Image (cartoon, rainbow, N blue to C red):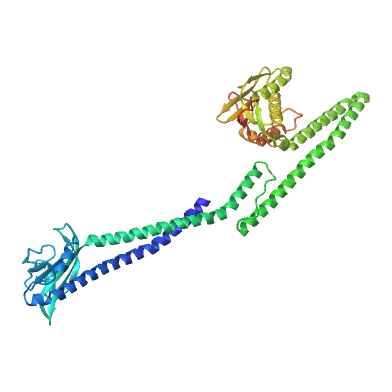
Length: 461
């Protein structure tokens, strides 16, 4: 945003500078041209005045000093001719007089009593010349003419220097405008950047982050206050929700345990025709207890992932696989494990254990007899990718997208589940700065993939 604002200031300044400098440069160029012609004409008038009497008396004009000064100026030239158009004074060729200049249009015009000025190309000098030719006359009688020429390169140099000066001034103005614009842009964008940083912290789970309200324009300060109020309300709502879930789970545990004991006592004394109903009631009570425990786990996910740190992944994975091997053997399924040893990820041990327990439990529920649940760890760039793959019936794309929703269960899920296991996996992975997803496995089944950030290991001192 700062770059765009500064660029807009610079573009606007450039347009203003060009709009002012372009006509100003052309005006100054025209003035320089007119001034040079006036200077040349003035010199010609002075020389004509000095040469008038000499031309009238057919003697040499007394202008040697002036001719000498012009001779020192490269390209500048003074020629004085008589009525026949032959030179009687020449600053470039003082010894070669009597040259016929009537082939020059400006000389012919001056001998006819007219002022002639303009610019023409000189083959001799291979360049353009500015010229002024005036008649030398007294009492209306023309006695000769004076022509003064000057190289146009002198005018071109003046005009070029003028444009260079204007361009340099424009660059300085644009640079100053860019510096001032950068300062103004920072005044606007700094509060926005701080607001964006606070929003990122909140998006990352830090609900205590707030935007500063003591700097910036009044509108931005007001926006920061509204943002902070909204963040505070969201934090209060989430805290209240988590507190409610935690309190409800705690409060429900005791009566559920008492209900289960009562059902067991009644079941031991009840007649045979009621045993089925009591068993079903006891099963639903156990299911409600599992749901309550799972909800309590979900409420504690932020606490579980609030302090991620480098954790050695391989030992945690091996320990959980060893724990589930006996359960897998009971259902006729085996668990394979492939993992590199030295892989450290940003997570917590509790979060990794709960992720693995839920994924392996889900895989064992759908794995067919004599199949293998494949647990593996790959390192891709700066991420560790944990796979728990089964050979179950699998899910289509829409079902895989909904699998992490709370209380969602697949169409072929076994009864008794809560539909919260993958929701816990997703929240724990996100809390550790990673991701969780379900992929279709070649040959059938599901590949549950959890990606975590790799970090440097912690070595003992």
